[in-house]
Amino acid sequence: MKDLNKIEQEVIKSLDKSLKEGDVLEIKNYYLGRKSGVITYLLKSIKDLSDGDKKKFAPQIQSLKEKTEKMIENKLKELSMSDISFKDLTLPNKKIRHGSLHPLTIVERKIVDIFTAMNFSVVDGPEIESEWYNFDALNIPEFHPAREMWDTFWIKKDYKKKDSKKRENFLMRTHTSPVQVRFMEKHKPPFQIIAPGRVFRYEATDASHEVNFHQIEGLMIGESISMANFKYIVENFLKKFFGDDITFRMRPSYFPFTEPSVEIDIKLPNSDKWLEVMGAGMVHRNVLKSAGLNHEEWQGFAFGLGVERFAMLYYGIPDIRLFYAGDLRFNRQF
Ligand code: YSA
Picture 1 (cartoon, rainbow, N blue to C red):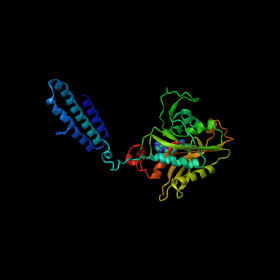
Picture 2: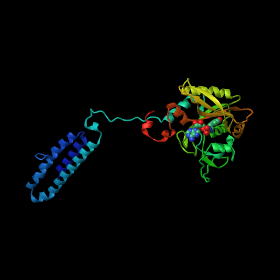
Picture 3: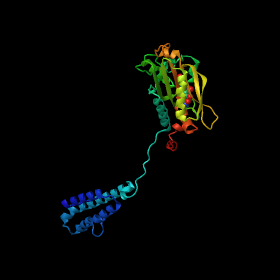
């Protein structure tokens, strides 16, 4: 009986050490080989035992044989399923694919890097925003027709946010502009910031519109910051991003939170088409007031751009929906 246990331990040990199918087959032959296998020999000797020993040992030898067969079968299965390099250590390993950054991350980082090099700080704001910060504080009062410019996902009325001092209606922010107000409330000018982030709009999707996209807000406030400063900053930014050969123009526009307001169009080399890339203007005195700043002391500009639109122009991507399709054939190209 002691020997039977010893044999079983030996089988386990040698199978553990086996790295190749050939090793296992050798073990099989050594213990279960038809002519001279160790266990086969024991089985053959049963007939020579006394009746008493037969009764005692035959079932144990039979069980050792079955256990050994099972262990060998399992080991062979394990080796056939494991990496091929276990069978032959000289074979090359499986190719491991490296992940890559999403094009929107690449473009957002590129934009952020350009602004931080011009001494802008990066700040953040909440995606669930109060009606006050998203609209009222930005000079867009209730029932003002300008609210229609931002189709809104409203949050159920019973949603409560503890730290809010102002009105208690909440929504998914429709732009990054509320971050301007939040920052101005807490900081004394002069300052220059950018605020990248996700925004949401309740609108139909098409090749250039998503319900969920990214913007980067910019804000620069000081004693005498003017549109001339804006023009310098935006020109520098666009040329660093798209290259020196682009042309751009500032076109009069309307936003409730800036006066005057402009939109920026660019023309890429080899194209005669103007493309709108961002909105901007001098921060409206009502916005400065909402944030608690004295509009006679401080002034400055703000702007907002859509990251997806920049990425589409940069890489020549024809449809905004590709960014969110999760198709690896697309994502792996960047
Ligand atoms: C304007 C003046 C400021 O002083 C500061 C900010 C702004 C921008 C303003 N808050 C705003 O949201 N304007 S916008 O509605 O025209 O959107 C800005 C940019 O977001 C657009 O130029 C476009 O690039 C992008 N955008 C708008 N709707 C989109 C979209 N991108 C993808 N899908 C949509 N549905």
